Image 1 (spheres, each protein chain N blue to C red):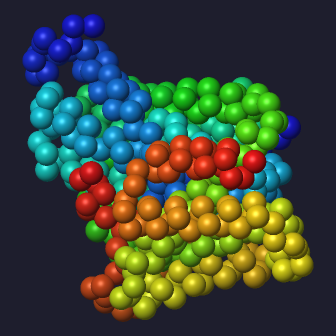
Image 2 (spheres, rainbow over the protein chains, first blue to last red):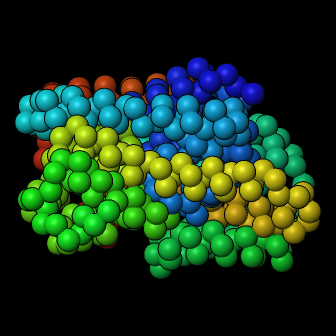
Length: 189
Length: 206
């Protein structure tokens, strides 16, 4: 069990430096989660999937989930509040200085750098997840030495199909998640 | 609460607050894939049904909440609530946004933890995990596609991928560093083709 102060600190820190909503903060949730509260890649992947079938902002869902599995009911409340608080504080600042904020060159530069970086961090996250979720490996050298089972191939195929369905055919992610669960029962059990 | 029958301009501050709570709560309950899924519903409720502000005013708030740090859905409810009835409105709107997300995730998390470790459940979880990796990968892929003509953007994508992967620098410091590089880049040169925002207009409009 992680202590509540660590959970609060983790989500406040993530909230204040994340741009682009729930998916923008995913890499940081994984990274900081591993460092601060001992989050495993499997737990993180479950969180990302459950985010899609629960209501409301993904970032709030994520905080509630990590808070719950790492600190029980109290943890879920603390993590949720910590994730919302930066937004509230930032909006109050913006409401006071609205015009000056929007046309500020430093602010524009920040966005110019951080938005593409979020994309790169997403690739880092998926590489790390693929390593541990498919191969159950700690390091990338372990991946090359592991035996490839039909389950591993099945999961990789399912991931590739998801990418195509999502990017090319714009299938609603809720249906993808449900289809994944059903296909998993038949092919990955 | 018969707030529907009273015109908004005749409402007391308290009634407006509860109305804004109801609008955000009902929109968020059905926004399963994330906060931005609620945007079309919110436009309808805020602009067309209750006429709390003009469409332009609301879209300005949507754009601003996308470009601020923090949670887009919470930023949006803070700013919308404030515009309708001040700090009390902000508070009610944030509550209406966060409550469905918190309650639904807590329910799902409790159920998920209690699932028996049978073969069927393990298969379903394996399937969900495989899908989840694909969707996370796509988020990165979309940003890459949007920046494919922007050399600075692509360089930032590669840098942000390699730093945490091959060094001990955490994702948090990678974000801070890329923000700093962005500021230096923006201040030293005058650029017109800056990287596109993370969500494009089409997604905002739903």
